[in-house]
Length: 503
Image 1 (cartoon, rainbow, N blue to C red):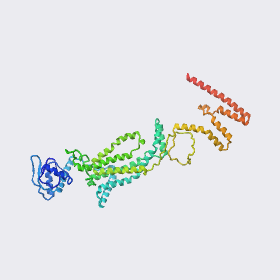
Image 2: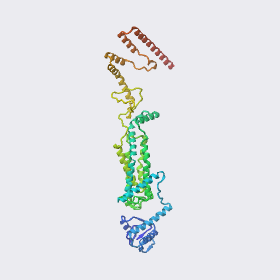
Image 3: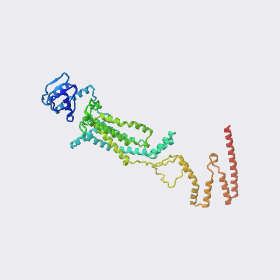
């Protein structure tokens, strides 16, 4: 077989072949043996020597360098032995590149999360050993999935608390939105009203951060555990269609995929590369799905959240790129973690978690009132009983309309209440008429304590009809005259003030 300066040799029984025939034969045996890159004739000699030593002395034949720089190896060589020999040569070459700094060896992740990651790594090895002892195939990959499930189960209560807090905030959003609209020009008052709303409903807007902070060390430690396990060599095992969970490369880069050769094939060939591409693609898709599940509804999104969502849309592509540069075992974990996270969120948001704050309908804005009329059918609570339901709020337009209706109905309701208390129908009707004909409350503060002329005339008329004491009636009549004189005086003073202001 003639091997040029950078030829391909696959372990098999090899005779004396031309370069073209050797390449064709090597391609035909792609599935049987791995690809071995031979950098020069010296590497062939090293492989031949290693093979001879390993097999107890194999007749390698004469190796002669040709004028073209090639090597003719005419020997009947056992394929498995040649594969092992080439592995040894490649290992020596890799060690030399590491020593020269051409290849950077990944380091274990330590730091303050080391106790958590080390404990999870030990648990991973324990599960892996147990599966092996039970004869379960693909023990390493299955151990990764089982450990991911266990961590999700342990952190489930914290995840549920976080979702409950999120649902409570969601149900309060309509009221918060109206408060923001009402007090958009008064940020201090806006914050006061929003905080009051939180207090009335026993909601802490930061409550969702607590469970998230508690679960972060566990999830980060789990990723570090898998990373360290891969560095320690625990992933050097296949998983179903994946050739190795430690592959496609330990250099943590894209050297296994790029650059493509003249035949547009990656360095490890399309057969293996296509298998290693499956989980990075699935991870990217699952990340999109997970973000879609966790995305708030359009009506709940603020401008700040919408601006952030543009950047978050690029996150799945970033994670997909990272999964191309790490061992397949980490990409396997990342995919199943997304699957379990999305499933748990869907379950909790569709009945698995129940909000403690109800979402009220037809919410308007609450305004402070000195007094209110309690509507018919209202529920009364004991003085020591705290109300924890949704706030009932009015907007100003509705309030003005409601107050006008109450004022129009108040005289008739007062008359009915008076008759129910024992007043005669005639007196109740008189009271109702007096209430309807009374003048509106004076805007001028100086006049608010004065009876109106209509009220005094009505009282005088009523006293005369009943035959009351004439002296009392005379006092009321003098009061009526004094009221007219006083009002005339107030009017004159107002005119003088307006004239002075005009000058």
